[in-house]
Image 1: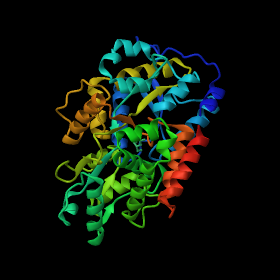
Image 2: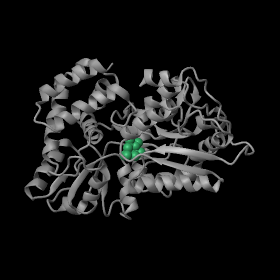
Image 3: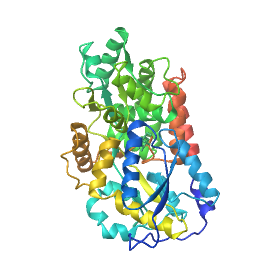
Image 4: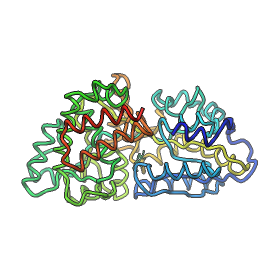
Length: 418
Ligand code: GAL
């Protein structure tokens, strides 16, 4: 990705996206994103409406396909054609790489005007700054390591949402014996990787997760602990229904909602689906962090402003950058999206218990050194390394590959990807 982006953008210097001064032109923005499910679409609509209220002309450029891999290909093609969208929903190392290639605008002016340094957690600042300058505006914090469960279904086997992986397996075995699908899952590589990283976190622990998925420590990647991770992944494969291959993540969430399955392991964009369906947390569904030693797998969506020409586009970028981190919008958007605000000073009153738990757990994890970037969702890793993890996790999940073979393949794939 690095060489690709650099080759594309050459030495284009970072263009300053000024704070929304007296309008030079009617603000306009073509926005590339992949938020097309029920909850996601409502969140995007909130942004569109807020932009329109500022006189903005929103040009919607959605790319279906959860997890963003399809969108990434579209973005590369657009930049290759010398026609990047004004604003793009990208994350983590991808922001750094596009910034390094000189493709992104400099948001210092609006960041200074709104004092982003004061209201953004350090973990988020590190994602959206390049060489000390803000090059993207964060819109949320999503937590990945969640179990979404239907309490009525669990009650059928006298169970509650599991708090250890042993309990998860015992509960799943009871559900299966009762003819109930234990785990609703969509068989797509990024979803397999989402389950995989929560199992790494839970079976290996936060230190092991950091060594293996963040630091790419070869001893950790080839360890007996990673064997135990793949042993658990083999059990997880036994808990999904025969129709899981290719299923979209939000259709798996709907299975839990309808009581066709007991649980789903997915980031809290799944909460956006429950919210869109009018479901009440603690009544219609329960949220619980996947079992771990106080880990928190962080994902955060941002909008990067690509270098574009035209006063209307530049004005549109400035309005979006100012709008997205506004306190009111941060509340509106994240209530729909299922995430929590990127800003730390948004009132909590409107947020549900799951969101409050996420806010509190994130602070505790940051203080306790157990706040970790999601690999599956492009915070801890991106590009070829993330692809190597995903390839091995999904190959193992969709075959009868042994845990030892999976570990051997993982070590080889990560070595090759670096
Ligand atoms: C994640 C993204 C979330 C959500 C999810 C499913 O990578 O950060 O905002 O959209 O994919 O598409």
